[in-house]
Image (cartoon, rainbow, N blue to C red):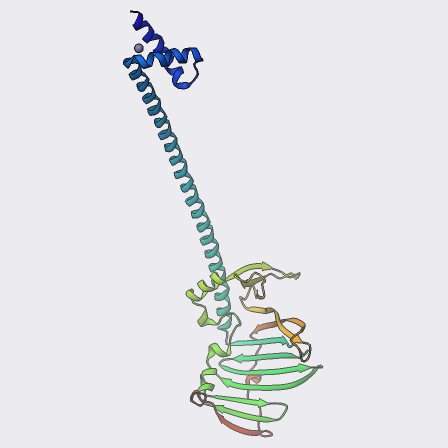
Length: 317
Ligand SMILES: [Zn+2]
């Protein structure tokens, strides 16, 4: 009877014993009893086991919560990636549509059988290079000029016709005419070659080509202080924006191309850069202004005439 009471007392104290919250007196009593009583030792083992199991269950619960949290974090990560990809795709598609529409407008305008085209470039030695094209119903005249000090230094006139194998080239300063024949001449006289736009002719206006452009180029709108708006296209991957073209929104045709820092001049006899300049090329298109007179070969009786054959095989070894 007495012994059973002691067991009960000890068993009441066992939790405190495991938690190490007993005072020394009680602790001694418990330890003394445990050394004598198998039943209470077993009870102590059971309590320890219970606590362990309980802890491991808690650990499992925590692990489970962690797992759930990790899963939701992964899910959020993929949703974020998905949103970014979706935005990139939408951005790309919008760009593709814009570029396709520009190219379609340009192609449509270049289909015209009556157009005037002019290209101007300021060269680094203060000369200006000008190229003019008059095109009417398959016949064309091309004038290349170099101006300096308000004078024309050189002037070449070129007359030809779509798909013909003849070009008449006139050196207007030296009064020399060269009549060229051959397959190089024929290749030059293709319509796409004669009537061109800096940013893509008809044949370059394909879905694949425009997909490439949409990928490699960025596009924005600017009016450059004027009352007209332009599309400005730059290279997507060039942070310094060294290359840009301005496109007329109405016609889709390039009116300006800028290559920054493209012209360098050096202090004579050294590799020290004296000056860095941008190359700016301006383009101008006009439609339905060319007359038959503009594309008519002039009277050549005053000129010295040379005949030349230009074939690809002459340039191959
Ligand atoms: Zn006992």
